[in-house]
Image 1 (cartoon, rainbow, N blue to C red):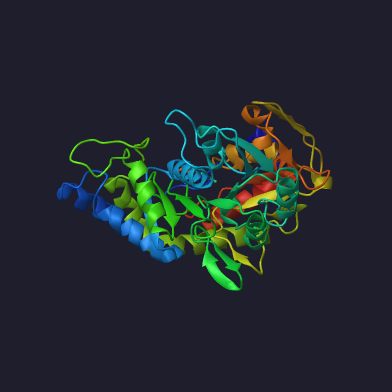
Image 2: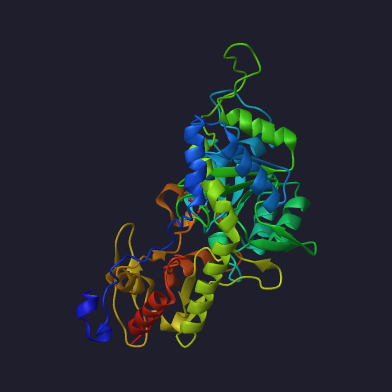
Length: 421
Ligand SMILES: Cc1ncc(COP(=O)(O)O)c(C=O)c1O
């Protein structure tokens, strides 16, 4: 649709500078640490920046050890492999540690959360989402354990910076002696009340991961962390991530290795960002609140969270359209179609309108059980309704960049109103 020539959008002009979904926000200190690494010749996968990032974030998150890795995906791969090895033992070098095993996984998330199950030859079973936080539904998890009592590993992601219901999810995993890989890639700085104590996401599983991808709450352009209270686990991940060299005078290998360690240059960028984490979170929170206020008169809701037991980092602001205000929209594998209906709108219409004004929105992650690659995997839902598919069909991520001005955000809010005219 040609939005800017449509009567509903009269007078709306595209932004001169693009308003991004969530782009890097540099403060200057990053340059200092990167320069220092270069000037002192620590241009490698060892150096003070890595040490500082590991030390400072382990302290912030409240765990004993952090291991700097190339990205969140490699952290999740090694976390999943370590969990599997602990549960099932070591396999042959040419066999994944999850061969012939099933793993219960978050369904509404980015594929990177759960692909490591396949890297390790395992079978992911996808667990549906609950409406209160858009994360793994404890009731569906309980049902999955009833159907598959042998499962010993669960991968849980926190969507868009909103913690899942970890108290319930952990209790169910404990009942079944199952270990948890926590994917806190999107939720660094989000807090959760566990057993009455406020703790950070990234400390809630048995093996925990975060990401510093360019769009995350703080970034190094890339980078990730594995977080743990176990020295033995931290040492193992560090060893695997540096090609599994044994302590020997030559290259000696008893285990399969990876080149997954964080670079000291990337770590310099992250080190410069750490002092601004809390500032970024409050900026993101203000964005979420401005949307909530500005959209309150429309038939939409903002992405929810458990207000009693969690404080999100508000990484992305999202909305979901009320069922009776959803206009016709259909999605194929790579294409879509929608019709405007008076007083209604659809995610694809709103996303197109946002694009037309030179801003960036994004569809909700397409649930894993709807992905062609995982179409033969088992999907467990709690009731008739497929909650993940419903959120995908009615929801979208709004421009959530912390450099967006209130005036720009007001224009986006205005444009969304016009979509419902
Ligand atoms: C939920 C989730 N898991 C994992 C990842 C992977 O992190 P990375 O891009 O650092 O590999 C991301 C983001 O990219 C993510 O959003």
